[in-house]
Length: 315
Image 1: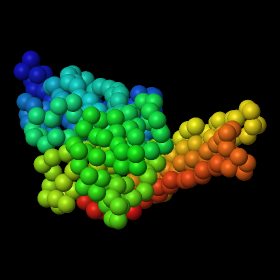
Image 2: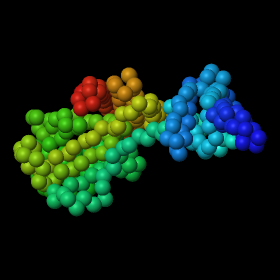
Image 3: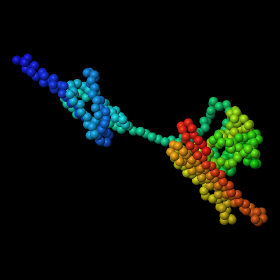
Image 4: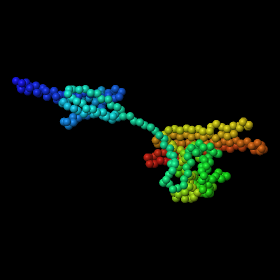
């Protein structure tokens, strides 16, 4: 009779062990349901797998499961994957919390700075940085050549022409971002460059490329300011100097720099300009020669167009 009783309840026992269910809900860190998340269920011992996706309310369901240990994994693009082991001895309900992947973004404007010592270079080279041109006080701060003349290898004559290592003025080549700026008739710099537009000046004094062979004295290579995707506006020295005795403006030398994108990541511009107004009054000279006025301007407009990743047009 006992054997018949066991045989009677045996089918019901197996029916129960093969009819378990696993239900769950997936939330984000704000306790909001996460739909369309992929849910993978695996039973390592039996090597069986089940896959489903969460419903709009974040729930999922597996049925017709047996007793045993399962590995449950939930993943969704933009969230960290979450996984756990579930021991099924009866139907069970679980909850998952997915943490969203965080993206840290930081923009940095990288501006070139010279290396303290370049052991791979055998050529004699001096560098005048933006800090020297704009920050160190020197006579005639509207002209960057006055800052270049502070180098021990440079001599400036009475005509404001530079001589590198004792060379003649017409033996020095001037260029800006590869553009030839030497005065073809008398030598020297063809036109002054606003100092706010200058990033650095390299003085190549020996062993430079053959394309500069006619410039036996050296090459003065000017690098313009970096232009990025952020707008920059700078006004300097905009307060005029007054001659209290004559009740007039004695000098006025403002500088302006404005740069930024015309089209993000594609087209940029930079405008830099300076004005020099000097009103001199000489007491011992007869009228009307007592008063002398000098006005001059320097302007630079730069356009940079990124045609392709490897093709950049600069004007």
